[in-house]
Length: 345
Ligand SMILES: Nc1ncnc2c1ncn2[C@@H]1O[C@H](COP(=O)(O)OP(=O)(O)OP(=O)(O)O)[C@@H](O)[C@H]1O
Image: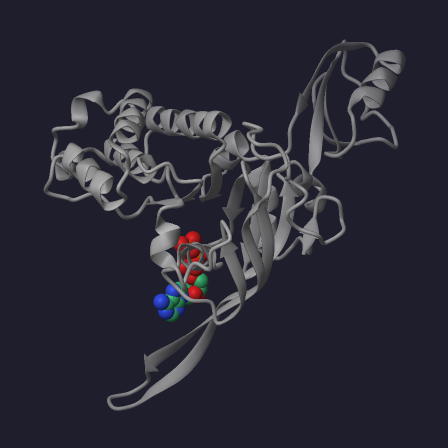
């Protein structure tokens, strides 16, 4: 497993939290130590025959998330993300290893833990389908025994910031996907959880709804210091919300560190696009390689971890440069390479 500092240690690399910087390097809130989850699966192989197969969904998983962090948890389909979240909520019991959330063993004290965490599964709603949105919130109010004043304050805040004002009396089944998702996020927050697990919170949303949801989560983390573990296939969610990212594949943690550090793991390159005053042969320099030439324009690739400044200074000194721009590497390509096993962290 690779960490940004190359030590293999986890949990410290993103210790200053998400983009919101809430809470600084706080106490360990989520502790995962050598956790495994094995499923016994029966598969029919004939009319009366079946075979047993063991699926190791999570394997030797260890990480720590500190209070106030906003961490992206990503991986290809079937990597073990949902299984991890289910263990962290107490829905599933680990086959081996140690788990603590806010000091609580999730599978042993699921009800006690429920008061401390909020969960949003983008693919499923926790709201009552046939009831108006506000009725679901009233039920949450009672279930979690949230003090009346606190409930009213949290509800007002969510209604305002998530734009739920005109929707409270609408039955959940009549809400659009984006409205329903915002409604679900509010429901998960009415009891002031310290930890919020978000499993694909922007799936299927249009651009405007995505922006709204991301802005809300950023503010929540910055203002309330809520710790967020975010699972998503949308890397823009991660880029805009999380300074720290964990990549899981085949149940194992492949990378834990800043998003920018993935560029180094993936040996990705930035591109300097240079317009010269006239057509020139490909420029020769050790600091970059020319990957494309079109008339007076040339594209020079150089390692993403390196500054463009020395290269720019040298070109400007030696060539008739008219204009320059730097293109950032494509993080999706780096991660796709990682999933495909071309990058061995
Ligand atoms: N209840 C279960 N019984 C048997 N196998 C399971 C069960 N839940 C998950 N698995 C298997 O465990 C592995 C990890 O699944 P998991 O749902 O955690 O992946 P994921 O990373 O969340 O994937 P996705 O991005 O597709 O949601 C997969 O091989 C899956 O088929």
